[in-house]
Image (cartoon, rainbow, N blue to C red; front, side):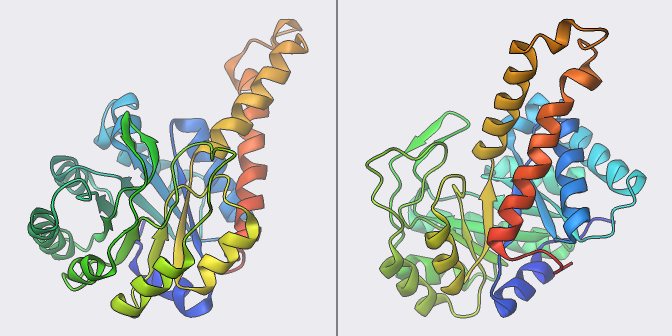
Length: 287
């Protein structure tokens, strides 16, 4: 049974660990993530970008697949199905499709419009038992073709959004999507601490969790980050394992071209990487 993300993140904040958000791209991604989290008894948030949702033929298809898979695999850990970096329209569509959690990313609007749209979506989501994440300050890198240099969030603006009743808050603190460049300056913990001073006991979200050094991850968790998003690293380990399988000629041996065999090394690599991240985040045995 799918749940919204509020309770799992409130527990993570109190327990000083972070719940992973692993983004899904297809059936193999979803299955591997669920199996990994069930094995180590970690709660999990399945993130779906609007681009990935479109690729999987729509939010209703995604919701139906995840709900059926959760049941058929006998998953016992809490699972939230969450829209990642949603537009205003996409947020409404995901609520209608049966997602249990949404992220409305109004960070590209001026703060007044971000507040107005977030306020409306908070009421809509909460009326239907759906949790909602909002964002202040752009996250660097590229997400579904939208580029950002990674603005650092204004703590006062974070408080304005937090006071609307959102369940968790994403704020730019120098983190980026995708692969981190060699000259990346690291997370700005002074900004993180200043935001936390303004928003109190509200779980915070760290986007761009792929590639952030372990010591910075753990420090961010100690300062109130309760949800960490991972996507790129799962894509990289999947691609590496699949490439090695093909380059070894295994796809040409027997029925190695069968997609169930061809995709298995990548799927297994996702399982292993999920477990690695869960160990760093501290969410094992927290289900």
